[in-house]
Image 1 (cartoon, rainbow, N blue to C red):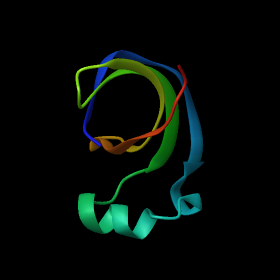
Image 2: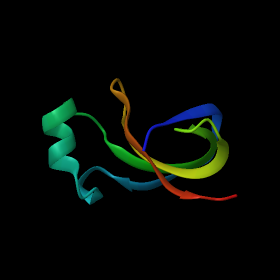
Image 3: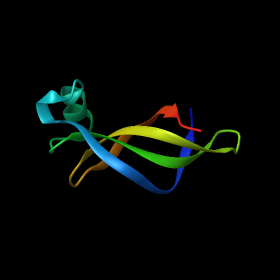
Length: 77
């Protein structure tokens, strides 16, 4: 599903760091070495058909690499 984050992501929380991430080897192979963290937060998103909804987002992030593999976990509205 394609979506676009509108504004800031609120209530950001770390779920896992480094070796505790299930996909850590794939992340390092695909994007490079770094201090990878899995995070979650809440934001408004614009979905494929133009509607705006509030969703819980999950993504991976590393310093110097940025956010990768962002996905909508569930809609909150």
